Image (cartoon, rainbow, N blue to C red; front, top):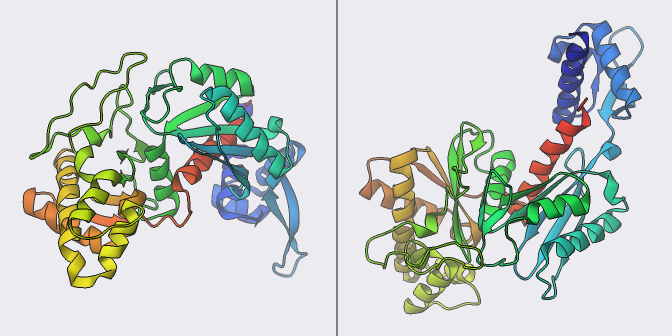
Length: 387
């Protein structure tokens, strides 16, 4: 029991320091409920393990200045990755979550995930001037369905080389725990930490870019479903478009993306729609921005995009009633409040639930990568105090 109590006290102090920054022994004791003696013993153990250090002093009352303790940034590092068909982005962060290196590499046509990921992480670690052995957590974001039981990608249209057995192979190659996670789920983690859903336990994030995806946060936890397919909203049957067909996912065979909501609000679909309204640009997001800049002339296009998005939002809300819907991805980010207000009104017209619909507020240029780093930090912080 004494050992368990020590571990609980150590974790409480470490979590507090990571969450709030430098603190004195007295402040740690007050906020954790530890006595001065116990707080001192706790900090001594953490110092001995190379996890905390004195970084300054704070003037107090009549007595001497109190030492300020902080978690040593170099006590652990993590890597987050976003893997796509054309580029792999990798960020290395210290235990405080500060990014110290970020690199992007081109797979160059190589379809072996193990060698591609290994090379990307090694390059990022070199840029950060740390050894790969210092990494305490590695989280990889990919498009597609990730099986929550095996940790493998069940299928991904853009990454045919990612299949059963890759998760184990990556862990063996890197010699550490590796987590593969759906990219939209990671964007939702970033949204909950730093964005429009900060601190909220229940919300959904609708990601509309080249693909379409939905992240579901319930009770402060991601809901993945039994097979990891929760949130594959692109397959949602909607009026006026063909049903998705040929969706078998046997090994070596990828399902079709034709039909369903995907055919209405993917980046490709929105770009085609914009052309019919006389707005053309290099990307769907740019098409939306051009329409917004056109004033009244662009409103019919925004109305149509909102009506299409509302079909998916309404279907989600009558089942989950999340209260908050965050629009993210290329189209959601470009549309801003002009689009979210239209979606909110359109949803209210077709279903009894009226959620708040907002634009993503994650300022990081790559929310998926940021979410991967945050998830890796959770792993690293658990490992730091593991027996």
